[in-house]
Image (cartoon, rainbow, N blue to C red; front, top):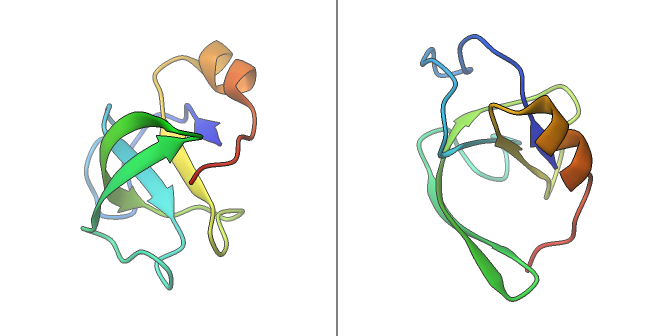
Length: 78
């Protein structure tokens, strides 16, 4: 999924491109991941946030555009 909230991350940093929210029991804060959507490499991201609905094997990618976040919806990664 994608999110577009403004403010600071769980780690206390400003939200910005290149960060994701994840369940800290699965991916601890500070972890760097390579994210794939299907076979396409979406980039390298820093786990710097958590979220109330980000449980288990779910990644929530930050974007500055709420329209882009809605358009992206929920996709299955690899």
